[in-house]
Amino acid sequence: MNRLVIKNLTKRFNNVWAVKDLNLTLQPGEIFVLLGPNGAGKTTTLKLIAGLLHPDEGEIFIQGIDVQREPIEAKSRIGYIPDEPFIYRKLTGREFMNFIAGIYNVKREDHQKKMEELFQKFEIGDWIDEFSESYSHGMKQKVVMCQLFLHDPDLILIDEPLVGLDPKSGKTVRETFLELKEQGKTLFICTHTLSFAREIASRIGIINCGELKFMGNLEELAHLSGKKDIEEIYLKLSEESTV
Ligand SMILES: Nc1ncnc2c1ncn2[C@@H]1O[C@H](COP(=O)(O)OP(=O)(O)OP(=O)(O)O)[C@@H](O)[C@H]1O
Ligand SMILES: [Mg+2]
Image 1: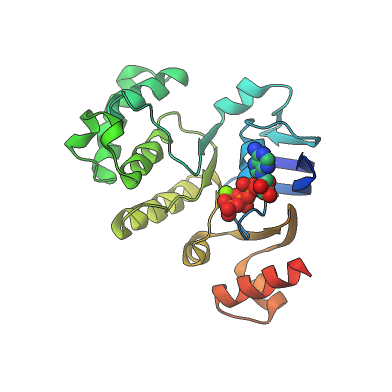
Image 2: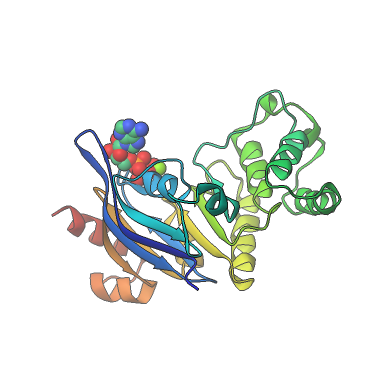
């Protein structure tokens, strides 16, 4: 079954078309990377899929479940990391993770061991037991990234996964995403880091002014643009898309 189906999705803010007639289908085991200039509509698209915004028109199905009609069921199947990692200031990272596990009804005995493994993988130290108000951006990003794995979602939405992460953590994230893909998970990632897109994307979309202008794998986009390097491909296609 398709993991994600988006049909004729449209969202306006006053007179701005943040997302315009978007159609997209993602399969299990696919990493879709959405690129586009600032203000193009990437974050809005993710928020619509996550059920945090209501579309003006169109439909979104997550494994056949309509996000508008069955929002709780749909949300239970996704993991979402927003562009600004959020953790309650007066909770420690560990308390926050326990809280999230509770929301998703993950049994305590199931998530304790998993949490320890994740802390090791993402090199999370003793600071996990300090209030999150003392965390740097990257520390928060690591905790919210770990939180993704607690309820084992099939569709993972991530807005700018690399912002604030040091190079080693960035590598861990890249490897983790590829492992998730191997497990048949579907990832929808918005980023400005083109090298990251090149390394992990099964398909790349380029959005501008709310419209998905180009979509395909790297070879197809290279063919379309007549360029080889991801940066040149992106610049050529995003330039064309504004014409
Ligand atoms: N809550 C809002 N109220 C009004 N306009 C909004 C709102 N959220 C987004 N917009 C507008 O919608 C458009 C798309 O914004 P969006 O945040 O989706 O872009 P983006 O592609 O994620 O950009 P960036 O690369 O800077 O993160 C922009 O013109 C933005 O000003
Ligand atoms: Mg954004």
